[in-house]
Image 1: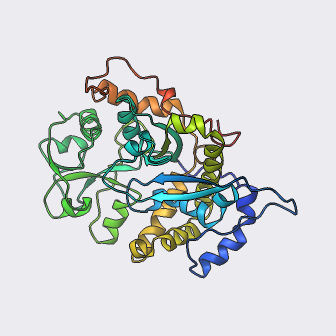
Image 2: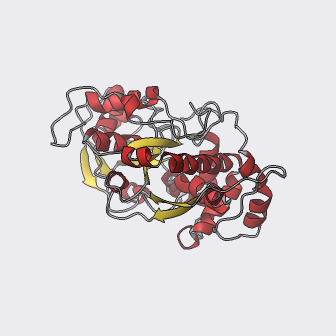
Image 3: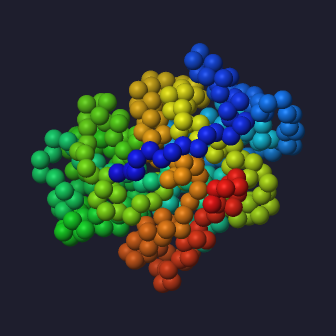
Length: 362
């Protein structure tokens, strides 16, 4: 589903100098507290005045968030003068928290950002955590009645209630010659359990998490059902967003925070096993019993998702935004703040910015 592993750019000097320290940390199952990031050589740099940055998670800690926890453990945020404050997932969407100024940054995804911004919320994508779509149609591996998307017609879908699900599934079903007609039920259990217990015929799940989780539990999904494999335009499954209000008033803080975050994800791409240990150490109660899942997910993300084609973490492109964004617009799924359907195609280049990434991340 994703391209072959691109050539990786080396981590920056601060991260490279910290590798010895962090290797010792993870080898000894160290904690998740900040380490000290050294500068290259004997040069002495001045740490900027500290600034607290809040990041709202979209779910419990998982491998989509690894680069953030790595940057914290390596001391990269501290070296950049950033005091990181992670807001745990709650009932309020990260997009809403960011737009309301309750969080400086938040974890979102392309469709979520599109819906929020189309509705007038002050959100802008500033960092592509996953460079590609990581979702698949989850069908029980033993289900002989579903062998291609058109076979989903008339079946039951276990959904999550987000407005992108319908247009996405109808697109891939119709592209395969089906009508795109199916029944939706609310998903109140894990994706693979809903499908394997017969509560639904199919769902949407992350190949980088739930598909691995299901396989490890002896409940695998069918292969070949990745959304981009089925013809869906590629898109950013996980993004970091901010608000124009915050960016315009705290541009230097945003640049420092995103530079450290980029280093964290590039380290995770180059050292997935160590990064997995750092993530587990950051949330031992939630992830300590899922070591194999975290390690396999970290490895898959490092190989196929964290870096763009030039080996850089974070940059976004208008082409990727337009491909999936236009699908949602053409499906009539986008609405303004009054709930009226958008009639003018959005200018997708305004939905994201690379301006706060380090120089060279074009």
